[in-house]
Image (cartoon, rainbow, N blue to C red):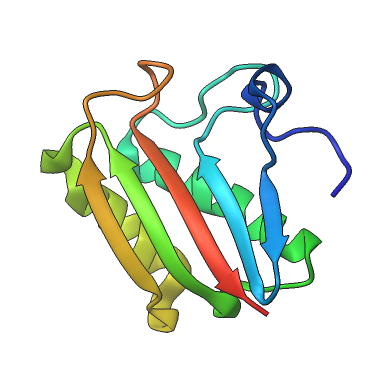
Length: 123
């Protein structure tokens, strides 16, 4: 897809940010980390908004808008703060209403990360 990786882990772990398979376009696990290793956002809400901004950018690079998203998988480190994540999701997706699963995980690769999201869209 070109451009600088959205995460410093992409080159290190040899993975793709976006993969297209037939009609599906998948954006891999995305956190609010920037290319310099800075985790953007101190709260789950702020991190989710940044993550969805990054995911939107990746879909736009493939010619798709958020209206083509059919599923989001959301991983949080503290489910008791899931309302913040859900509110951010609603603020971004509004009436689009893709499928969403939110699960609590024991941790993400960097302890400053509170949220990670995978997304699937269809052409």
